[in-house]
Length: 209
Length: 85
Image (tube, rainbow over all chains, first blue to last red; front, top):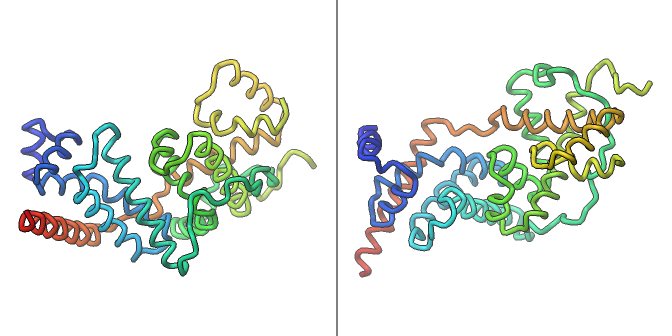
């Protein structure tokens, strides 16, 4: 803590300053960067791999790779964007390994119409989360998001869970902006469709009786 | 505007990234189309639920262990780089 405070006092706590210091071999500076983003990287890795052991490995390998390749970081994108890109690649690689080398690619499922047209149009209960206890709700949300394909899930997690912009997400995943938008719409609609089964208003009021 | 056109704009509508004139057209559609209104509201709720409920928290002890492992590996990598120079 003392080190972090000292850095802040010295006015070098900005991300770029930490990256510059780490590039020159300052391990403490890199340690601060790890602390800044480890929770996000863990969350993204868990969402992609569905496996805690893999997620832990992804966190370690992504930060190590970032450290070893700091020289290649140009500084024209955010460090976080660059880091997530490394982590997503690591996570997809592990997912592929677990699935016996079946190719896992973000280019799958581009043209599918599945889930693009809403079928479930009944309204939800006013406070759907309150229908379940915290851990039950967590299980429902995990199970539902895990049912999406990698391509849709990854875009949804980066855009809607991590709150990154469409442009940043496109850059991280090496996709075009329209491709990200199209996947995001499908991911959102598919999740909505699947959650409806748990959150539908019991009074059945879709207004069309 | 048809429901299909509304759906195509749904993502930008929810993200607030549309022009004022398009927003007015979409609002007009929502005004009379109950189904699109439900789809819009429940999609918005879907996003909020995932945003508000952190599903994979990193427990502190695991966080510390990972941090230590990462820093040890980085140190090793730095040392081997120095010796190879």
